[in-house]
Image (cartoon, rainbow, N blue to C red; front, side, top):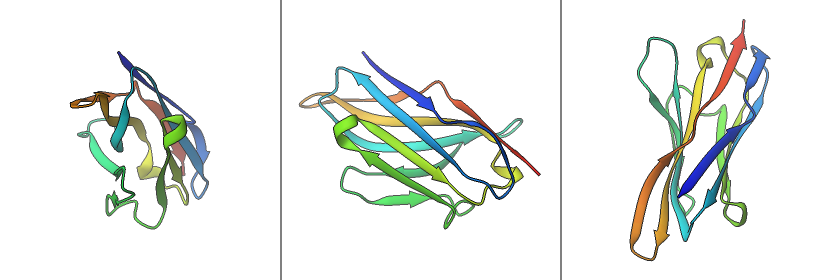
Length: 120
């Protein structure tokens, strides 16, 4: 079993910064794509950023230039550095990862979410 645990959410003023972390633990052979999603009240969950094991990144247009996704493979951890935060960034942020649990077996796991609230 694999668990993803997010941390780093909170309340911040517009223009401020937060850094989210998501640590994976359990039976992990390797980590492939790691992602951050968010879901605002009344809206669908949306992909914010993703990072492949090879270092390729993809960002939602709304966060390009403000958010940076990174990972520490030794710690099985993915980060989301969020700068110049706006009120519309307020949401529950979830991490998501494709985890290889055996040499040819991969599953996708979700964290429990962490609340980010940006006050205007």
